[in-house]
Image (cartoon, rainbow, N blue to C red; front, side, top):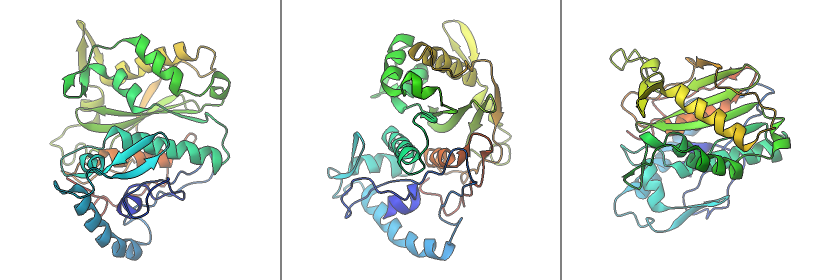
Length: 307
């Protein structure tokens, strides 16, 4: 199916009506053999090309304004339910990936880590989109209304329900934060092994963005209550402070002063497309604690899901 072939490509299917759209994803081991993320054009191209035509037709059905599936449940996974209108919001041209699909992907990865790859619980911690919106509260909209100013207590409460237990977090090596800012999805990975915060971003900086660099986005200055911060440090400092309040004895080092590493080898999306959310999911699949982003191959022309 369209979402299956283009979006996730995993070995395990969610509980979904097979006649309708669905999603699932492949997760390779966090710290073992190299992994290859299979995407259209990167592997078995003839087969993938043959499959893309019906996938495109399904996308057209799901994203047309009068889609017959608009009010029909098309995906049921974990604690979430997606309707045709949710597919429309994420896959129509000009719209970024909706939060729910990022969270669906995280749930798939967590399941596969534990049940397929036998990794210990908490090896890789994913910060869900609800917590992400609290972290970046001043710069995101909530139901078309301006978000309230940042408050740490509500975020601590959310992290308490989201994070593994303290004992499990003693095994944590990666903390992954999908971040939405200015309608653009990026990925921050806090890596205990390297003691770095890795930044993955699908924008084609420099070459096709009029000289704009990755630092222009991630080091942009934000002013809050009369104080100035760079975006990356603001988000990461909020995360380390609240995470260590929620799990005081988790054993994961405080990371507010760690250095940042921009992953220049991360595949970039086609200029003018709006596929950043799908790319960060591919980065999540391919990232290893010891080796970084390895064997992540994406044909950005064939993987141009929408503009």
